[in-house]
Amino acid sequence: MLRTIFAVLVVAAALVGAACELRIDGTGLVVADASLTDALVDDGAIEAEAVVDARDGDACDPDAACGLVPEQLVGHGEHFCVRTHGGEAFCWGSNQGGELGVGDTLPRDRPARVMSVTDGGGPFVELGAGWSHTCARTADDATYCWGQNFAGQVGAPLAVMGTPLAVRVGAVFAGAVAAGGVHSCAIDHSLSVECWGDNTNGELGYAPGSRTDAGEVLVNGGQAWSNPNATRANLAERPLSLALLYRSSCALVADGGVRCWGDNTYGELGTSPSGAPVPAPQTVPLGARAIALGGTYFSACAALEDAGARCWGQGAWGNLGSPATPVVAPPRQFGTLTDVTALALGIAHSCVVASGRVRCAGWNGEGALGTGTLGGDAGCPTFNTGQTPDQCIDGITDVGLAFVVEVAATASSSCARTAAGKVYCWGENQLGQLGHAPGTNGDVSCRGGLSVCNPSPVEVQIGR
Image (cartoon, rainbow, N blue to C red; front, top):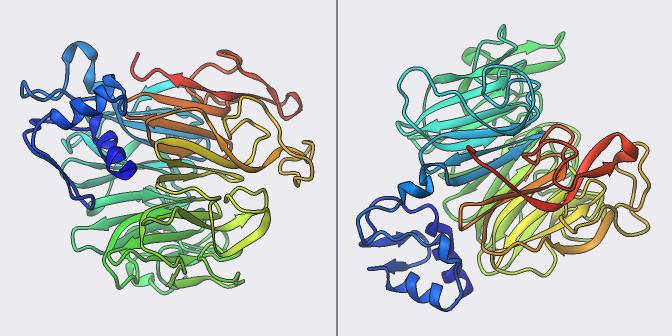
């Protein structure tokens, strides 16, 4: 029942057009009219403001500025972005490589509108955030990226070190797009994975140096391989979604399995660590069908069908919801949570959505777990130089937000999107990652006075 109710919550804020019939893939739920959502509201199961009244043929109330309602939330590096109901993108936080897409490299402590693509590609329908770059898919399935490009991760020629404006990625027409550390990938119309950017660890899905015919070249004084051209990865199965780590890539495939390839220093592929690149897709031993996938930096998690979530990779701070271990491989359960529907991972913390609530684990020195206070339990290893070794939490926290449909994480911050279309962020805010001016809205000193943080969720104002 919880999964069915949650499915309604997910679409309540995102539904567009007439709602005479609503189908949700994979749930078997069909809403023939508005009576079910009315009943759920009357029963207190849904926030009233999240319900879309489409009985008049219009899913949005112009007086409520519905075009600015966030429908997707992503984060990586030190920046977050949302995609709105109207197909616009807003980003905030660090902008050192132009990853905010606003035409310059200055940080923003308020959501700034991404400058539109210039060749009529139409509104954005999907975003993917990388370390210092961002990618997007438009309504015509064209792929665009912006930000740092020293390894070709935005798909521009390597001579272009970066661009603060969106550039078209070759002739890629995609059904999904994702960004990682210094590489990017898309699922194209032939249901194949195409990737571009750094390939030093085989994260593009083929052996380093094996695709010089497609534009792969040696860079960094012969120390690294890069390819700015979208090139097909060697994944045989049909991919459904992607999660890109810093030097690895993972795909959720049609049979519910997860395949990963690339660097495996910390068990990022779900198998015992290996020193050499592993460009061939490896099966992650999950023990159940996966329904959602998340991963950044050096770890990943999968939400499993009726079995909670399992995580693997670097877990030295208890950030994978299991006892602190430098390498977690094979995957371990994320606490005892069930009904997990969304996942986000930072460097040393992770957050999931379970039964509509945000639950987090790991490092809390910057307040990324949303407990309202900084710090944690004795005996935790030190994460940042100069910090005391007692700033991670042994166990799973509850951030205190309800009706959450999506989470995102940067290196040391977290954000959540609710069914009502609101975004809340917490954690480090030195560069405006929380969507407000550093030192305001209850921010406190952290990292021994070297930064400012906010351990409590603060609402982000989109487009206001």
